[in-house]
Length: 347
Image 1: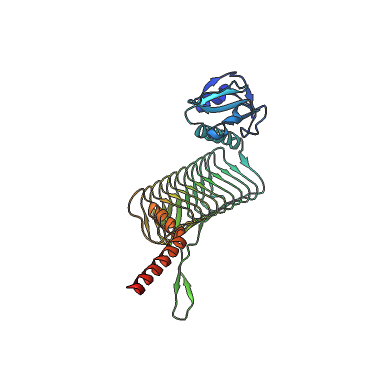
Image 2: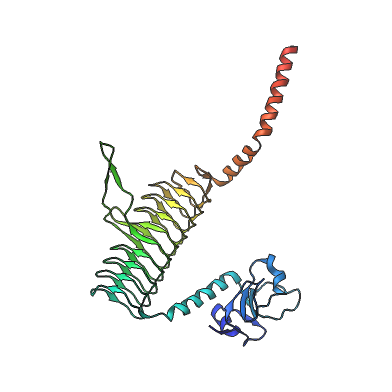
């Protein structure tokens, strides 16, 4: 695709310095970009590349004062990183909008209801009574079970599996290999030591503007719904168990796991490889550091925790500092014991 600096500035509400007709056809890192590419500068430590970059158009901050002239056309914005993200999103949207129609082979039950400008890639399976909204893009080898609903402008990447009766909202992105609505891990111990499977008859509800990473798994509820609320962002390789609720605009990094029936509040940030046990309450605004193990509810909003078991962040840092000093403390205690022993001997 080809854009002029003027068109880019209009999309991100930027101010042009230089040639508004300067054209770009792709994107590049500021340190590697070449002619015909667009780059951005958000981190000040990369400023030196601004004066040597081969990019034709560069997005920079309104407040950045140039130390020397540059050859590229400049677009000034309040937040270069967010503006560049918005531009990439628009670029992706324009690319996917071009995809329409049904490739073959596709298996689709006659009871399916399709919206306008839908794209179904080859080898997609769509079950009974499925409702697919407008401009939905479903890439090859996806599976959509019976009675699933998918909202407008949602994108399902290759190999996504959505089990029966699940609900996916509008403008949702689910990446390759993710599984939505597989059985929750429910087994009843028996007297003879075996386990009786508890049927999982609920579903998963994913609200609007959610993104779910590749190979993530979200289990269906035993009864009721596992719920991912609007604006939540889940990274790759995340496990969300049955009857969990993930709050609005909560973000969870890769390889984290949330056990059954835990309720996570709004605007929570969970680091990679963190683990949360079942039936807990995690308050709004909580920050859980990477590899933390959360075994108790966090009831105070905006609390930061770390460690396993996880506890309050600043207290944990003090404990870590003390742990580092233990060898020196042991040496000092040993010296004090010798002094006391000598004093007793001379008394």
